Image (cartoon, rainbow, N blue to C red; front, top):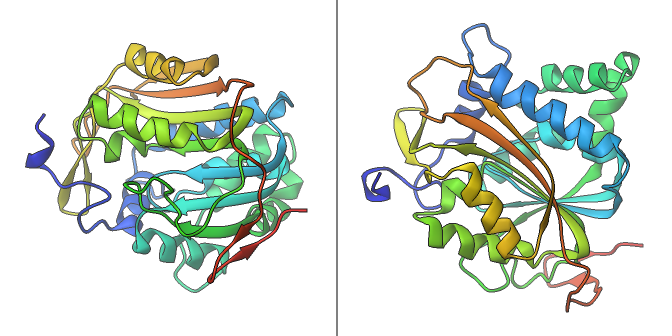
Length: 279
């Protein structure tokens, strides 16, 4: 489908709260829970529980104001930095991290995590832990060579990208171009965890339809391998929801391991607005 017929996530007015209400809430009328919540949470929990994905710094580049994929990660990383392309998404996320009135309720996602981990008694602790682990929320510009200019981020042990690449890419060349930028962010040998939708052309947020790049499992695997990643795990979950709000056919979850060869130096992030240090 021609992306010019629909709005673009990172260009046009995008209501991040409406996305959460329509696709990630625990309301009875929300039909996407199996696909948008249970499948991702199950696979993120399993991936981190294996104990191979661990370190000091995790970077998250995901759509909207999502946090449910970070509940498992917070147990394995000292610092989590969230990058957002939209001010509205930043405001919505900060409303939740700061426990402000009207913040989106993620309690149902937290419960899924602790139940899977066999730690149902630690529900409240889990909420506190993930909030405190999200130490920085940083605005980024996807078109700049350094997306967070003037901030220079330290190389990360792990990158997570959930439902973002297909939302910002007009075509497959765009996807690979953005993926290449993302792939520069991990340390040599770091992990890249990708969550996306297969065979999708649009998603409805509020009253607006937004473009989504249509690709298949083979394309995304080859794209990651082309950037030097080795696929550790890949799970595909066929769609269970019935709704015309979005036309995806399946959800894909990939864990990939980067090359041990790299040319980025460790550095402290410093600029006029931030002074981020990792000890």
